[in-house]
Length: 586
Ligand code: NAD
View 1 (cartoon, rainbow, N blue to C red):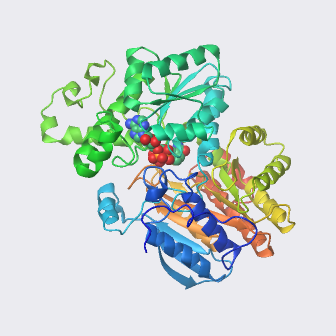
View 2 (view 1 turned 180 degrees about the vertical axis):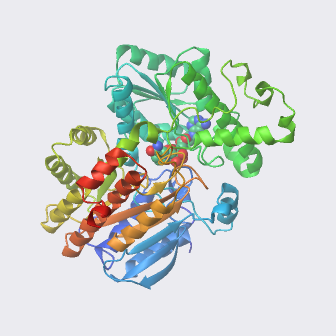
View 3 (view 1 turned 90 degrees about the vertical axis):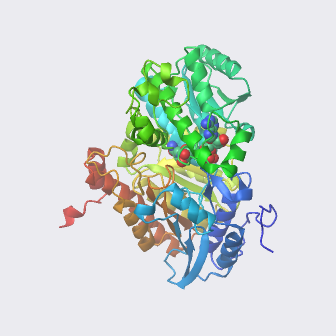
């Protein structure tokens, strides 16, 4: 019988030192796939949704069952092919080839929009893989927390002498990724006040120790946040309300946040964003009954949301886009209004306003949706230039002590990397594992390779109980083309060039990564990004050692090459320092 809901017993992640597949790589893929769907990890396991709006691990339950069955019989010289979350073939390759090759949500560019995707999704032909959902290397909110922490740390360095102590930081969305925001802000000693429309999401973040307090009344939440700010106490508050309503109330009360961003799933206007003109319950009904009207309201609301952010920015809030493409959604709405015949008759911007009440705002002007920057050019790109990115690993044994062993090793290996040591100490203390014990820590060119080889030795010498899986987000230095996010405002204007993630997937396949994925639309939605993922298993063998050497050098190396090619000096230096400049051999 085909499954229709998540079954916690049937889909329980295997743990321990004994494998159920024909090789540890297949076993790793199986455990990480099931770990992605573990209810402690995934946002909506009954819908196979892992995080990020509708980011799924498998197309449907039948596909999930077939993937599991296929991984169990897959030989050590075969590769399983996954087409948008469905297994479609097992082909002969060789022992060093990836055991799984994944392509998710790819559409020919002229058809690459949500409307066409949704038609195909309804016919059961497509799945949205987000980034680490469809590539089976999501590790819960921890997967993004260091990146978010680094972003706020960079912001604090730039504007507040290295600490957010005594600052009020406003944002929205406590989903799979957004749920990392409160912890990242309090780790930087700031006060976080976060709007979220679904109460269970707030509760989940409190349970997993990412969030400190919950309020259902906006004014009470604001009062408490302002008090914590005055006392210089780093605390986080989730408030059950729409982001738009929180921002409106802050403006009414003339309370200007120190920083302002947003992590609702604005990349997906139908599934990911709840319009301020609907309650959450109304939204769930309208979404299925009248998706066209839902989308209209969603766009209108996102437009107002961005206008409110701009207003607060004009009053002094340090404002940035946190990778959900909300600026583009607002601009799409504005452009449509400008060109629709009815709107063309409008004479003043005021008349073109959505039904929001914002039209009285003195700071409202058209063409301002992109007036605040994205977080990558503002804070992260220098790290990318050094090949730094979200290196992560999980203990297949399921034993937290295996992660403790790796934590110790990493801190001893790179004592000069002070930022990383500070992070690791905090992570050990503050991060509760979700599903398989895992760790994230941003490492750069050279470091990732050393860490991978050292993990392989831990497995070989039995210092950990089972192999370690090493992977990363697609949000990384050399694996993504996303002009409103990772590749926004590249020095040479190459923001939309997507050869780079394709080359990344190809080189990781050639190098022998354990599974390789190529996705479209992650983070920012259909038509806005192409990106690649890779995972590599350290199983303690000589073969794994050779593969780790290649893959963990080449993968960040692609990022260094990409940024050097775009003209970044730090990347050019990293290129030379790591023998990645092919011209020197000519
Ligand atoms: P998610 O879908 O799991 O969570 C989104 C949350 O926003 C949900 O809890 C939802 O209830 C809430 N929400 C929706 N509309 C709202 C509104 N108007 N007001 C208040 N709350 C609202 O998504 P996620 O995994 O948390 O990712 C959030 C966004 O961040 C996505 O667009 C994703 O692509 C992007 N993202 C950013 C990064 C990054 O590093 N910056 C990384 C991954 C994802």
